[in-house]
Length: 280
Image 1: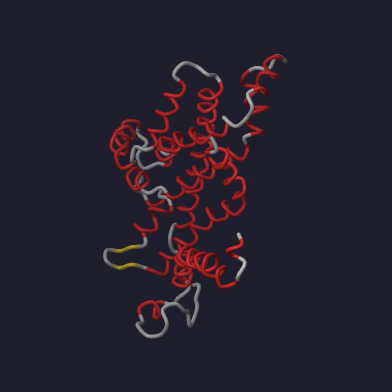
Image 2: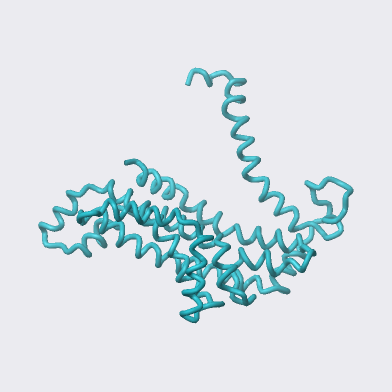
């Protein structure tokens, strides 16, 4: 650390790389923000500085919120993401606990198989899932997304929780078993309270993937009033070769805010959960 004592060295080795990283990370959000408040005249004009706004306007947000079905798209995204996250977490908790704590024959192989299932690309899975959705009569409904999203959420959440459950001392369960507690009571009163960071980490991961998912939402939903934000913004706000850049960027900006808010509130638990999952 003595190498970083001088100011020039600290600037070159710490602040300059950090500044470049922050700029690259935040510039897309800045571009979305200025585009969403630019008048149409400035958007198509080749004069002036493209990185600044001369006459900001909220007309694009007004058009997005009051002249399109964006509130319905946002509600669909919230509903599908929240329900899929809770369903996936419930299944992942039971699967991870059974694999890590019950110690049955072949538990490790089952855990590896579950994680390998996560590596299967959704672009391959949506073909058989589409046939299943049609057979069940769920096409063009929110239930189609709620039932298909756990196919890629449960494997990773299970793997993540397996790693976190492994860090909880097994002696706590042995003491509870001696006192007469059932496995369900142990899971509910001992394991889950200790695994809160892991649960939050898995929940944020599942919520983010559900919120941003595109392939399944594009394949299984066609009605405008049932679409999610990720699909509706790029399909409903583009008319042939005409791109409504103002509403497009406003919709993308509003759609990215919930995920950013969730991360900002639970970032410490998220990092703690990931650290506990990969520590061993």
